[in-house]
Length: 272
Image 1 (cartoon, helix red, strand yellow):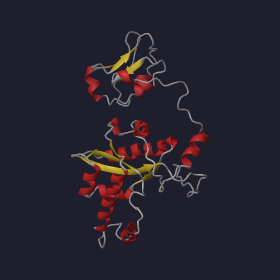
Image 2 (cartoon, rainbow, N blue to C red):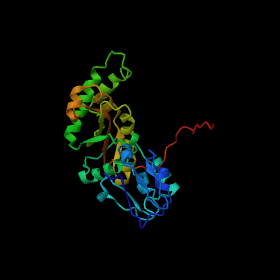
Image 3 (cartoon, rainbow, N blue to C red):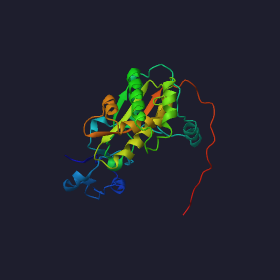
Image 4 (tube, rainbow, N blue to C red):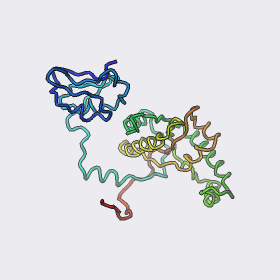
């Protein structure tokens, strides 16, 4: 299959596609030829699309599902520095949710954004499980507590905190899933050493994009830790064979709004 498709009427032979290719497989154009990827180099293409999106004249098309190409409207996606600063600084971990369920269509919109997260070698190893049923989220919380009970009087780093957490659970407070109506689980190939980082990057995209849709999120550390080790929880979540849980995130509509920006530790930078 031809790796790139080039419109000879639009190509200006600027060579940018060749320069930006991270795999250095796009041969630059000259007076007589258009940019190309030689057949021997085609298997090296990682499908990142840098060549396509960096073409000023839109002459080049990466031949990966070309019918799905979406044109980028002029000025689309440009954000003023103050806007992005306030948007990110006001982002909060939400631990109090309404009982209203987020429609699946809206969740899909946020995951569609997360689909474009960076991944090593553009491998895109992250897949998702959306636990949409609040009752199932409660069962997951209960299984997480079961896992915690096994940590009592062990040398696990969480051991000293577990009695207090179990006491809160017994008092009716959901310390595992915070009463969230939904849970997002990222899972990755079990044999991919860089996929855990890819998953965190993708989850961060979801975390950052969600507030624009009115959705609040909270990283599910307890659920994530349990899901990496506790088979009953892995089964309940539905982690496929050959794959492993990477991390989890609770989400839903926030019960309370954000009206300010809290302080943080002073910035520490070493310039070299």
